[in-house]
Picture (cartoon, rainbow, N blue to C red):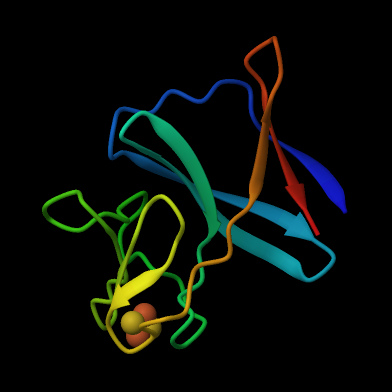
Length: 113
Ligand code: FES
């Protein structure tokens, strides 16, 4: 288990996401952090269907109605609050969630196993 300093300050509007890349023992790993209904969530940027990144444009992870995370390749929809796929070829599977820690100085840390 390794801790990574993700950012000095996380400043996201509701339904806004930001993509990050960290270097892990498995190589470069893409992830994103999302604010939805006032809560912050973090997931690996890897669709359970084909194991490829969800987004085709930087920081674009949400469906048009901003209600779900959407895979840009085949359109699977995921619940922002738990990463469960509710519609699409990976229905019943889920995104890999990641643990964030917030320090008093606004820094955001990620724990990756
Ligand atoms: S690669 Fe994401 S739904 Fe197919």
